[in-house]
Structures are given as structure tokens and as C-alpha cells.
Length: 223
Image (cartoon, rainbow, N blue to C red):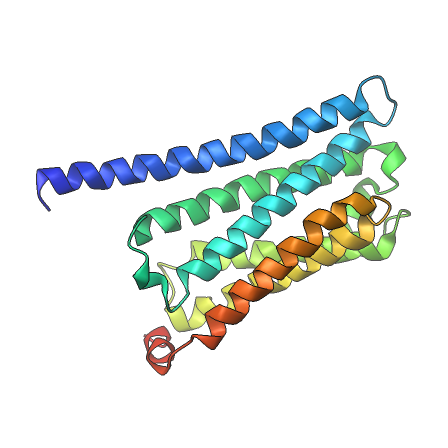
């Protein structure tokens, strides 16, 4: 690789990282700022922040899964920029931010007496007094997401045919997270403006990814 090409490559890497940080900071700022306006002087402040962190985690999870679908899409070679390496780094960055906000959401609701969740409900299925079904679905979604993340971390140590099928459980985690969001937040009808379009977008991209799947891609996945 020439010096000029190396500089351009570093520039793309830096640009991707900056874009990821900016995107995350922007989303976080909008949600936290909106939450701050809503909770000023209210006794439900902790609960509202917990809900805001959940919304942020949901948006990041959608972006994370979309990036995963694009990374494995048969048409991915048609888009040359950013590079595959940059896309993978963005995927990893999104996964880290998603984990951070999910953890924040769990900790806040587990420690907030008003939420009716508690540590027991946050860790044990059907243990919450507040909408136990929705909370349990969210708990299973977290477990599924952790499984997908662990398999991704082992990607360089295990053959693709072993870790890749397990990593696809990320789609299950997203479906469960969506159900958790809809069932757990059905008191806020306005949020459906977020849930319905994002679900439709993911379905369209997911279907296109598998409809476009070619036999050559299936053969490549076995190696």
C-alpha cells in the first residue's frame, strides 16, 4: 500500500469513527435533553430517565442490526465506501453503545422503587410486579443479545460455520426487544411513530438480504 493510499485509509477510518461518535452523541443529546425537559421538578424523574435510556438503546440496536445486515448483504460489494473494515468497526462501536444504554436502562429501573421491577424482576423471568410479561421478554432479549455479542467476539477464534449461525440470534434479540418496547411502553402511543417505521425498515432490509442470497454466498459461509 502506497503512502497516499495509507493516508486515505486512515482518513476513512478516522472519519467513520467520528461519524459514529457524532451519531451516538446526537441521539443521546436529543433523548436526554427531551427527558430533562419532561422531568424537571417531577418525582418520576428516575423512571423517565430509565425510559429515555431504553429509547436510546432501541435506536442504537436498530442501527446495529441494520449494519449487521448490510455487512452480510450479497450486494455489499457494490458500495465501496466506507471500507468493509470501517463498517465492521462501526458495527462494533454501535454494539458497545447499545450495551451501555441497555445496562443503564436495567440499572435505573432495577433501583427505582416506582418502576416496580427491582433487581429480582430485572434478573429473573416473571419476577417484576410491573408488566411481568413485557419485562421477561426484554430480559430474554438481553440474554439473546449477549449470546450474539459473545459469538462475534469469538469470530476470529472459531470457524465461521460454528459462530455465524449462533450470531444470527441477534435478529431474535431485536424482535424480542421490539416486543418488549411495544408491550412495556404501550401507555405512550406516540412511541409507535418510532416502533412501526423502524420495524418496517428492518423487515425490508432483512428480506432483501435473504432474497438476494446467492448459492456462491452459501458456499463461502461454509469456509
